[in-house]
Image (cartoon, rainbow, N blue to C red; front, side):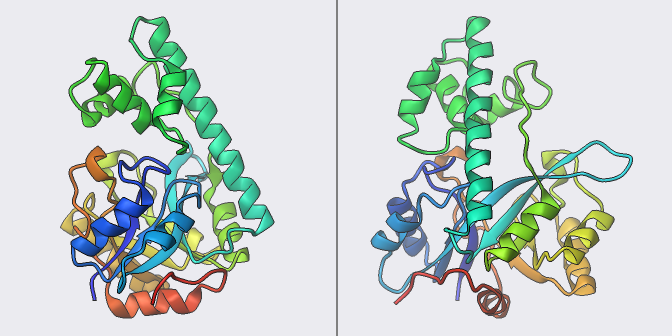
Length: 285
């Protein structure tokens, strides 16, 4: 079996609709794909309806979180959540808050860019998102369309970077609270790309151990942004803490160059993940 447990559609910051994404997964020879859009379950129904025969679609989400450690500034972390109840009230309320936070943040970034003469218009960006959760990738694509930058990557390396004067932070969920919300909704929380130092500052082993004590069930080890050394370290840490190990592409369509199925999950680990999730079920034959 070939299993990719981290992909994004146009419902958040990918470029393919959920229907297109599941067809891409099948064409790439995947047996299982998880749809994990940012802070939303909005693509689940469309992915289930368009699912090609023989492909299993795992309903999931990527939750925007922060690690608040002692004697250090908060660190942005992402939590993959699988097989949770989408109607669980507390988790539903939190993801609605995160979507509103992301929307307000995007509008503030665009207003600042426009005030300095960059040809971007918030209403046009929202319209181009076609109902998706608007975030920095949508702003990046607008900057590309306007000829301000050559690519989405170039936008994130300059105008939209954490060091840019246009950067606006957002109030993400405390990761320990996020883990508790996912577990209470019957879901399986997995720490996404936790040692991707190429993305910026990462948390230490003490933070991951604290997450495990709070109910974290897995680590995303095989990820395109992890070096071989980082993967070895995470694999050893997962064994030490008794956590599942997953692998995935973090596919975003043309927003990133990484192809779907670039990294995959071991079938035994996937079966253990399925056994741990009680809030919802995969879409499959």
